[in-house]
Image 1 (cartoon, one colour):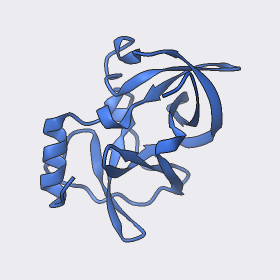
Image 2: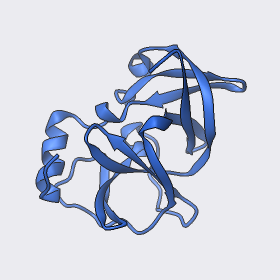
Image 3: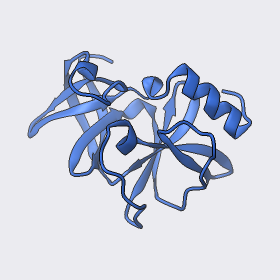
Length: 152
């Protein structure tokens, strides 16, 4: 990331978060998620998006936020996590924002933020940037590959 980048800003439980816009393919309305027995705890299941089977990541679980049922107004952010396309379940997408990175290692801020890569400064406050490549551990990634029966 450069000192100034563009981010997709979204809400989870009233809190704003962001991922680099360069990793985002698109945003779609939430649909029913098919559970994947044996998947890592932060994977809710899978969805079919235009013929592609994508794992659905729960940032709520990763950030230790309260669980809640899927709502009609929820959205999936389809993004790249390393070599894999994934769906991130979010409450609402706010905007695309150009922002200044102000902290390179937000993982030290609180438990569950291991997937964070920094903070960004927006005119109305700070928000956490998520590094999707760090979202799954190597062990979790291998489990996901085994459950989906696909390569990385």
